[in-house]
Length: 123
Image (cartoon, rainbow, N blue to C red; front, side, top):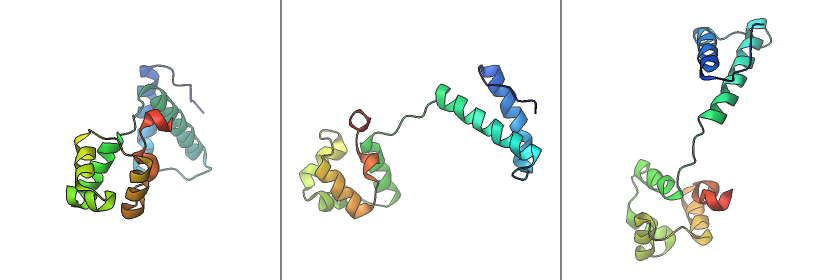
């Protein structure tokens, strides 16, 4: 198996070109090509996680996105939070979500609570 660690951008490019050939015809698991595919995918994922991290979205962005995707308005959030002014403050970014608000949103809309907790607290 001609696989090497991915340490540089050039190594990363090499690995991407190597794995690309498997996209059209994914090899059978456990076959030599299947093992090579798995190892390349694991190496690429590790390199990209270390060099191209994706930050978690801000809780307010998660909330706004959910509302937009589901056709919900500030009035809908006000019903969940129990207060129109509170909903306005949250959506304007003047008030962070409290644990009580997070629990209410999770219960009403099913948004996972960990997406509504700021990273500085969640980490």
